[in-house]
Length: 371
Picture 1 (cartoon, rainbow, N blue to C red):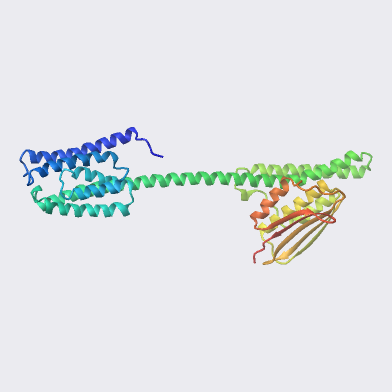
Picture 2: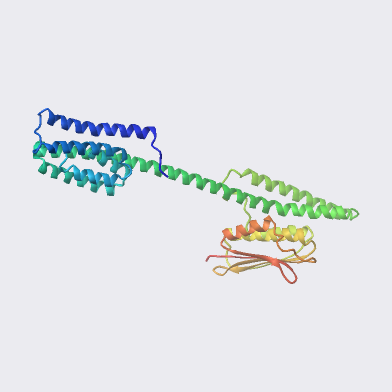
């Protein structure tokens, strides 16, 4: 899409046009006043004025074809004295709008053009002085143009960096929100499900022995207290890096199973691990077991649950939670917990499987275990 010429563009183009016209008028005035000899034959001066006028007019369209126009003006300036101002403006434009690998060779051609001019037009003045003066003017124009070019490139680079930094910040914020959401679900889901189980037992069996009621009330109180404590920890680090969120380890799986047994679940734990389990692997395994136990407690109350952890370095770790169900499982009933767990396993470069089996429901994950 063509950009419309703004007020600043009109001012700059007008000033450059005046500069080019002034250079041509000064040179023409020297001839007309007799301060410099007229070319021979005389009509060459009239032709030179026509070329000078056309060259000045080209300034208004120089940005469309900067290199092509500059090369034409360099060719014309080998014999035309009055196009010098427009040629200098054209060199400046090339330096501003084209990279140095283009503008520097064009500047070299302008020096060659000046050498040809002093040979073709010896009456224009002392050859060495003309050559030196022309090179200084052309070099100044190109140098100024290169300065503006590099400054513009720097501004564009800084703007791109700022845009990338803003995009990365948004992505990091999104990732932090996702991580916090997973942590809150994993931390609180297990505790709240324990509360639900024991509260339900009290509701449906109000005539239970006093010892059972006291034991259930104690578990409810402890679970509620722990849930509040976990919630405080998560909320307290919302402004901290994700790595500072409270993180469990593989050793905490035994405590998790014990809590589930105290809630009345029939859970068996089997661990066949060889070697020291890395922190990330242990943390992810804990979350898998936690999600499996929470889902079993919610959707298969009273079912037998088998938790199995096997693996060794290089071969990876397999985490499996299997439970028996009395009712068929409805496909597509996955909740946010399994979705978040899938994201967590994917971040650990593992694989997650879940679905019905012939005897119930299985949640299985494989995680890489580096040597």
